[in-house]
Image (cartoon, rainbow, N blue to C red; front, side):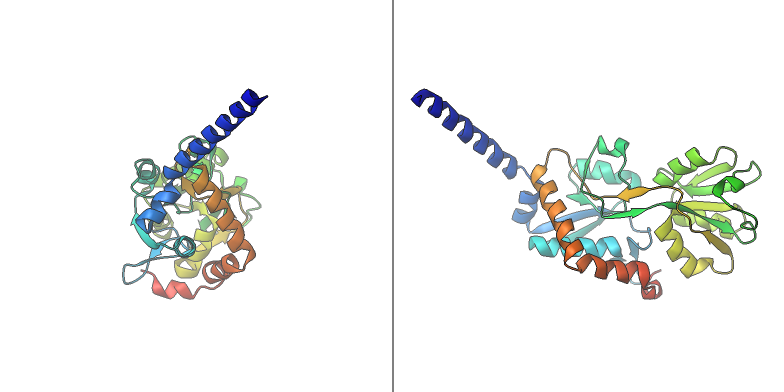
Length: 267
């Protein structure tokens, strides 16, 4: 009997040692020791992250990151990064977390872990004025003579390829370049996340574009972290649950998705 209990005790101690070793390697532990939370993001996705007239990065994601750093008791450092460099930057530890309106997908989940979704969006269409007449669904716009544009390498491109089989599809490095093609008359419609389209209509689209605001897809957005880090994932999930229940999240959502005063501040 003594040998059995001794074996159990050794097993428990071994497991505790392994757990402590895991914590020592945790990104959260590194953040606390460093005193700084490094956040990777790509400015330009209204109203999640964009630059104001002074060049500062502002937005819904930025304010969430600020609340996160405050809860950790550390400083916040934003690391602006091109979209295709976000996941590689995370993997190579250039920053600790991606907070950049990233859609949770199975393909991305093979490379990173996602926190529970912090917001759900869908793709919608901005079309040149007049094109909306008689349109009952996006299928009415799937015609060979029409050109659809979006940003390269994002969920909007994947949705466009899946939903539009006949319309011509062109992609650009940024969402701003793509939608500008519709404004310039070189394309007929633009597909992108609904929050961006709402903000763009309020900023530049009125009188030129029409927003077909029925979501074409269901897309949960999540914060991404490195794989193999349960302590950080656990903390982030609890942080998200907390701010969604104490009113902090709702306050930020109101500021960026309901109120449009911030439009006066951006470039």
